[in-house]
Length: 116
Length: 113
Image (cartoon, rainbow over all chains, first blue to last red; front, side):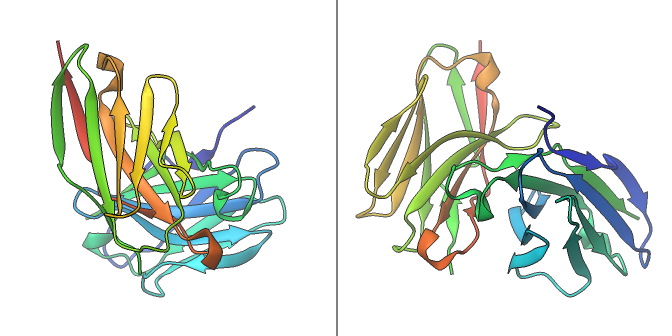
């Protein structure tokens, strides 16, 4: 069974640009969550989608957005990039909303974004 | 809201010794807790979880202890091996409010030979 797949794995952008990251969850998983990971802040929750609906949202500015498609694949977009957006963006999938029933969020290996 | 913190940013242990990683959470309503392990260049991986109706749960070489009175949980790794070197995160959530998992900032476990 394939794991969570994130693309691209690495990317470099400049300030002011926008970026779209993609996440393909494990087959059968309907929930996709996104996290931003930085050395100083750890894992910060961005948002969660379940069956194409945003179920939960973290405390990030509106420049951060996401969506989920009918096949459960998800994308997140960051517009008007800032230097502070440089981070590892992790996607996690689970069967149930929030992964709280099974207890497991399955993480991808992340997309490392560098903003110059 | 919930905040989760770990007591030490880095923990160094000798191979074969037991490791104990600690975590404190702020929301007394949190009722579900998970430990994750993140190796370099990889995403976090589930290790073990515990619900608030338990105070101890054991897995293979790992034990999680929950003290709800002081809002503290710990992860114990028995006979630590070099492959255990990683960053360990705890996460907490109040499942009743359908809120999201809140992660701590992580503890880096270094296993020395």
